[in-house]
Length: 205
Image (tube, rainbow, N blue to C red):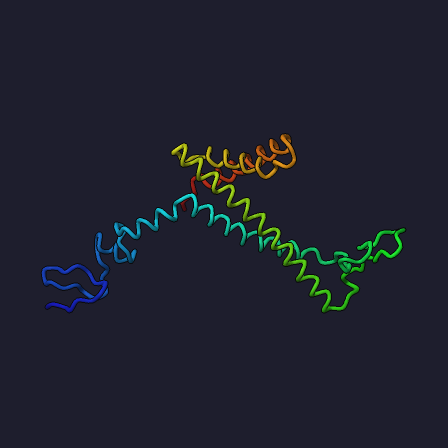
C-alpha cells in the first residue's frame, strides 16, 4: 500500500512514497533541518562576511556598548544620594568663603518630581558614557585580535594576550610610557586568564 508524499517525510522506499511523520534520512535531513544549502554562493558570502575582521569588530563594539549601557545604568542607580545643584550658578556647587556661591542641596530634600528627573538624567548620562567606553574597548580588542590571528594564521591564547597588551597600551597612552606599560601588562593578564578559562575542557556528566 502506497501513501501520498508529505513535506518532511522519509525517502521513498520500494513503494515509491515517504511515510508521514518519519524524518528525512542522510544528507537530505541535514539540508532540510538547516533550511538552506551550505554550498549556495550567497550563503558562503554571508558566512565569510560574518567571519571577517570588520564584522567581528562591529559586533564586539555593539555588544560592548549594550553591556556598558546596562552596567552604567546599574551603577547610576546605586548612587542614590548625590549632591544636587543648578548648573551655571556662580560658584556652584557651593564653596565656603566665596560670596554668591550656590550651596549644594541633597537630593533627598527635593520634591519627588525633581528627584526622579535628576535621577533619570544622571542615569542616562552615566549609561551613555559607560556604553561608549565599553563599546570602544570591545571593538578595539576584537579588531586587534582578529588582525593578529590573520597574520599568525593560528588560533591560540597568544592572540588574546597580544591583543590585550596592545589594547591596554593604546587606552593608557595619554598617561605616558609607564602607564602604557602597566595597561599592557594588566590587559594582557586579564585577556590570557579569560582565554584560558574559555578553552578549558568542559566536564561531561
